[in-house]
Image: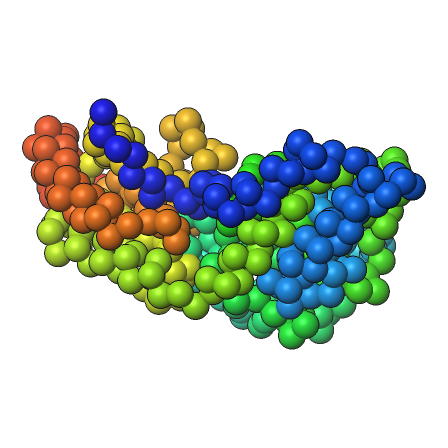
Length: 399
């Protein structure tokens, strides 16, 4: 058995041992309901308040602006519906073609309910065109929903500029920051953002816990109705161990912000593979991206075959979002970037964490060139095939 080398941290992360240590007492000893009137539950309520302060500190927010959720999908859905409820007379939504499925599928559902949705394009590096956003904005725009960082390429979006433009038209600004929180600094006292989503399992907390930032003064309508929990903004008994874990994870993430280790190892992996393997390209902007993420396109091979052989060596990577794994369709993000067929089907995402070790990166550099060489030797693709495909693409474009 090969030891596991885990380079799929944009899908999920290992729970930090310090996070586990913080949450365990709330599974065993302090199991009271934080809404109870007795002191046994009251002490749990105080611990929740501390966790709220820890999350707020990471975001540059006020603790009263933090609502605990079950994760990114609930947070995104809640934010979108809350934004529309705040301006019910408006029927236009703007998002991007490369959002996570938890945003795109809600928008597609809303189109069936009569909303008009504009899906902004990206260029070949996965970047937005702010002029396209400005041209799409109207007085009828209720919401602009834009991710902070793409989960597949790591490309960073200009949230401050997006928010300023949207605000100038009176639109609500929602940011899916699930991939960005804990990896890059965010200051919500400065950013023109009304709603922001994060998920614990992307920053070394367990799955099933997240948070939604709701700007103070925003007319928020809860998605889940029931009890008075979370100041009436999210009904249901709180996931106390998860919330404690998220608070500790936020505290640790803040302490590690600015640590160059992930970026240095990412660059070592990326440059090493580019030097050792021909016909490879970086998918996404070379610098404006998360410090832990590289998406590489290996020409003339299938991504699924690369992942199969990496798995044989105990190396975990991915060909895109974990929420769409198992689909035979190529990544909607890479398709939106207009990548050629020979790159589109051979693209692999490596995403590191603060627990990634230099020896693990060196192991990938040792085994992956041989994998690609073997796969290309048995692949039906060739340079001639690429030329033919490019010719077909040009003919289709002319039509």
